[in-house]
Amino acid sequence: KSPKLKDPSLFRKSAFINNEWINAKSGETYSVIDPATENEIGKVPEMNVEDTKEAIKMAKNAFKDWANLTAKNRHDYLLKLQSQILENQNDLATIITLENGKPYSEALGEIKYSASFVEWFAQEARRVYGDVILSSLKNHKIVVEKQPVGIVGVITPWNFPSAMVLRKISAALAAGCTVVIKPAPETPYSALAIAELAVRSGFPKGVINVITTEKNIKEVGLELCTNSDVKKISFTGSTAVGKLLMEQSSSTVKNISLELGGNAPFIVFDDADIDSAIEGVIACKFRGSGQTCICANRIYVQSSIYAEFASRLADKVSGFQVGNGFDTKTTHGPLINQKAVKKVTRHVEDAVAKGAEILVGGTNRTGNFFYPTVLTNMSKEMVITSEETFGPVAALYNFETEDEVINLANDSPHGLAGYFYSRDIGRCWRVADALEVGMVGVNTAMISNCEGPFGGIKESGIGREGSKYGINDFINLKYISMGGL
Ligand code: ADP
Image (cartoon, rainbow, N blue to C red):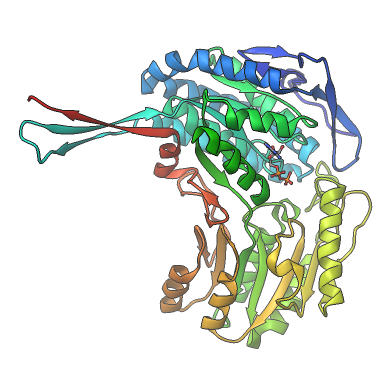
């Protein structure tokens, strides 16, 4: 049985357009499922292209006034929102655990992480500086101004139902953009709760809009990408969908930011602090039951420490408690749905068929629960090497030399995060420089925070979220040549 909310009005079951709670024009709804119990949590509107057009229109109506506020005004709205989020953190975390399944303590961590972005970008709103540049023309000056890109289509995944929405919209809103959010169909309630808190924080009509859909995702996505009033798409999700959105956005030459799949390498050299490396693998591989885009997917361990590392890791993993995220004993929740369970099962079976050994786990428990797994004797031909598992499977590969492992790590079309453990300072610089990724964890698995520029290279994405760079993704430069001075 799911715990009740202290404030049930945070559990909104309608979509949100122009500060109104509305149903789909068609009257259709779809069911949202708790991945732990597989029971229905509730229904939300099944919106279509017509509803999407309406949301875009409202975001457009709101844009000028919002963009013309002072940066201090936008800062004040965002800080109000941040304090509302923190005040309601327990309820918001409950909503995350309900719809995503992650343990409540992790959900609470996600809410604090989300709030940190709202605070960060509230402050960044006031630091959008332009430039004055000397011109080579006489009596001229070059002025560079920064302006919001306009209406932003925000498409987010289910693995961080709150953080992915807030990380994007706080930067967009700070810059002066208005937003139409399309959350993942699996986790609409976190996005709707954010909309409710935005109302309480006094956000003007149309600045934030949320449309929910499951069946009509393709059409709604196409509308967001091709509607000429939408000036930017900010997306986090799979590489395949990212590529499709990029293609669709070309018709209007939209600005795009993409945070896509990872397949992160995690390298443990024989000079590493093994305890700390094991702790790092556990944090990085098993958080959210392995369903994050920066989760380690390929764990390379140097041969002289391979056996010891594998058995110590397996020992720890066998102590994990898989269960409902509301149970305080639970360390790892369910996967999001059966499709995810099937993918993880396929990856494990493929590896075993090609010679991998299961040290712990390896099977589906019941429903959407998959036992945290450690595999050894991994080799290049196995599917896990090239496909992101997005599940609780630590796959251990053996390597001999630094050059060899750098080549293996970089042998991927993806380039989001990479991690390695070593106590040799020279090696730390060399390997950090050589890894073809957007983010490197050196002797740490902690790479997500509002101060750092989150993002990938290669087929893992375009753009950065968080940090002083993040707001630029929502800004157009305007070059003004001042003559006759
Ligand atoms: P996953 O398979 O992990 O759910 P997706 O990339 O499919 O990853 O989902 C991420 C987000 O992209 C979700 O909000 C999903 O609804 C959305 N999405 C999926 N397909 C499309 C599409 N064709 N157009 C727009 N959004 C889409």
